[in-house]
Length: 488
Ligand code: NAD
Image (cartoon, rainbow, N blue to C red):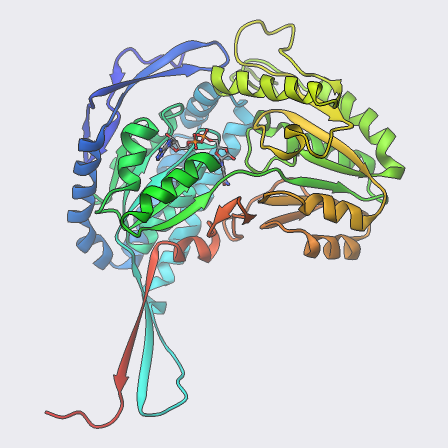
């Protein structure tokens, strides 16, 4: 199953599918088998996609926002109708288990429906009067779509990161050029097929599969793209920002993380272990929001480590498409080798490997890495400070709440954090002291379209989701008029 006999067209431009000059090989990371060949674009195809989007922009921007909302709902309904197929594509191409792929699809549906709701209200709220300290002038503020936007996404939650950008961009009235990850283009190709049936005018949505250098870099530097929204690694985020500076483009960046989970001394131990496991091993740890630094109060430290070890060793790893699989494979060989390299470096730096650390013996094929726990991790080690993007948890003890907060905040990143405590008022105070864009208290990593996504420091530039995600694709215009009698 899930094998494509022909090379799939990887370009959808101006309402037409097209082939491209490059060839991308797409694999199933659990079997290491080729799943599909997909065409990749080049700079010339990016020019065509941008030109199509520019032609469509005037019409789409003027389309009543309620009509745009109807298109978003049609996309949500199309995704729902193909839920099973999309789950299979996500699981087969990314290596995540089916139940996680189902959560991804549900998130996509919720995001399109949420922005359809915001679009419903857009026309009525487009212009607002601005109070002035004089009656000689009147002023109104108006929000308008910012133009053609470029969306570049990674491989870890491909459809979800796409939906978080695409739905608000379309709702705002922008036209889009989307570049999926070359590693996981299959779900986005299916999404493009759904969009093709949704009633969206030709040119409003364009897809260009391809590599970063061949497609992403020309997008970042493109004169016809007004705004770029990028999710990916910090290294590439910096390059994107540098290229975008050439044309003074607006840029939103969602980058890496090295987030902390704080287990206070009054925490429920079972809950704390469950949240640590979810925060470290969901999506095989390939999450920018992974709470990979676990800080545990002295009093709970020993039993916590014992229980976390047992929990990690009980996780069922295997074929992502099989029922009962709890953790799948890493996305490709490069990621697998990168994670194993981090584990080896951690051992050499003096950290104590409690469990895991390698390939599960029962899975000789596929890019599987065991759920791994380290303790005694040196504070100056790469293991403690750098994003690993694999199923690796580092646990350290703390002696006081102030020490835990200081350790949690001592990072170049600040995406998310988690606090586990029976004292909710205290947990709220700790949440206020943490430098992170989203803090969960006694909760798994639930993300609602209504709440913002993004972080402090080097984790992000701007915010996605909620009204902030929509505003990222809008320009602000003020119209100021003299109030005295007009001549002529
Ligand atoms: P990556 O930076 O290698 O690639 C991301 C995207 O950028 C891909 O589509 C890639 O083709 C493209 N790209 C590569 N070089 C480019 C260039 N020079 N110009 C323009 N585009 C280019 O990231 P990845 O390996 O796909 O994903 C993992 C990274 O993404 C992790 O660091 C993770 O933290 C981050 N991430 C962040 C969030 C968030 O919301 N903060 C979410 C998911 C992933």
